[in-house]
Amino acid sequence: MSDQNAMMMYDASKKSAVVAYILWFFTGMLGGHRFYLGRTASAIAMLAGTVISAILTVILVGVLGLFVIGIWVLVDAFLIPGMVETHNQKLVSSLS
Image 1: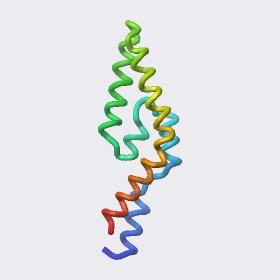
Image 2 (image 1 turned 90 degrees about the vertical axis):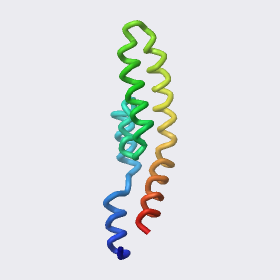
Image 3 (image 1 turned 135 degrees about the vertical axis):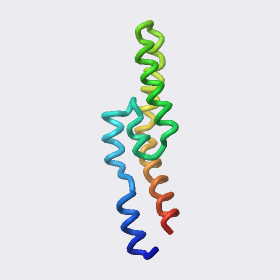
């Protein structure tokens, strides 16, 4: 693959921290930012935890689960730059 093709592939596939933060803000509890950054397993865990906890709020048990997911989302706000960098570095490695 030529350098120009590799550069075009990188530009088309790289992830943006701005987009990740927008997804974090609007779909954080559902793991949208993690799906975007290719962290599918933890995104599914976050989504499932949120849905199950929301259902269990009827018997007040789910409030604890939503609290834990909320903490996880808050911590992710600080982890997003590293996740974006890691994804983009893996992309460079795969293209070179």
